[in-house]
Image (cartoon, rainbow, N blue to C red; front, side, top):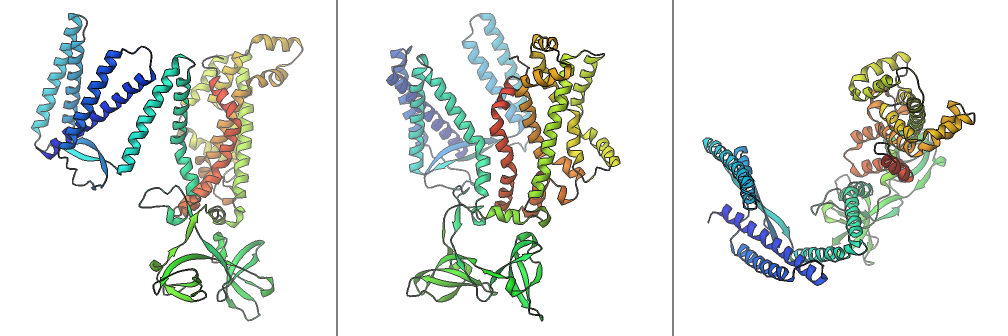
Length: 582
């Protein structure tokens, strides 16, 4: 038999066998759970047919010689077979036509009258004609060829058995939960909660990967075994280097760590800054009395000396590429120093988090940003003023459109809504020219001043809320002597808190993540917000994922905090948005 045909047949038999196994488990579980409404005879027949069919299909599938494709790596365990057909478009359309022929013929058997049966047969005839056309198109091109891609999902034997047991247990659990559906509705709650938990895990994996990667060392960023979910940290010991000591000093008002380059003629020391990383390589002179020696972090490694396993720390990286290791154990070799090739020693690590990624990431920022506080300050200014401006301007305009009467109100509201159809690229250049004439380029003003002129969608959202508030409430306020402004501020505005929370949260997130605006209007580092700084950090330190993920985590933590604190209002506002009524 052709290897491709044999693999297709074997794969189909294996799939059919496991489907029948699942059906057998479902029927057995329903019988054990005593689900109401089951016909005992039909259930017994189904169990018998499913069991026999599953056994025959799996045995035949195992007996057929199934050779995997030439580009598939062989596995030592169990392989669940998979197939795919690489074929031209005419063959795909022909296969689709054959499928519809099968569907229409099946519907013909189940037709309730001759008229319906005739319609199904006509449809099947039309698809048969299409099948003939696609077969001819396929045969006209000599280069067309159908290739069966043969592969599968490899499992170790223990993993395969555990997976099967887990699937069977999950199926039985769902059946048992379904038994309670007719009593207290536990099944619906179980299924709903399971779906929510599963969705949370799936959508939370990227965030979990981001946070975990921010605590990894560089050697854990890639692994032959796949993603490293449990970070490890290199063991280190404090070490005072006598030949090349590290000193702590003050440089332009900030603490730095530096090493000595040489001694100057006037008795001072010329130092080379090592940390912070943003000014690494900068040299300056300092008096020896102003310096404080600090310990270096020496990595702990293991190796072999004359057949004896040793543990020590690297106290010097030699110019030849060798690593000088100071042995600490065993006691018979303690205190000795040996030189090793880098491949001859292995780092000693433990499960833990590399917190140093966070200060190192901030240390790469320019000194004038004060470890990113300037970026944070600029972002907070933009966000706070944008939220205040958007909420106030949109609330006032929406109140006027919903409650006040003035000429051309409906026309003006239509004009406001029509601005939503304008792409942002259309207004980009006019806005830039306006702000340039105002002299606002390289300032924060273009990023928050437009918020005080409202936005069409938020105006529409708040207007719908205002229109749902009973008119009697406003009439009572007028009778008590309230003006429009006082009625708006004291009576109407508190009624739309959920909608205002939605507007505030969405504006906060939009202003916090705004990258295009700073890219266009900002050019100096002292005016950059976090979103722009993150992009620059990525272009500068993109080869160091740990630092990049650490900085990204710091940038997104405030947004997460705001959402979690305001999620009740956010969800309530979306639910009661006025589009479907309260």
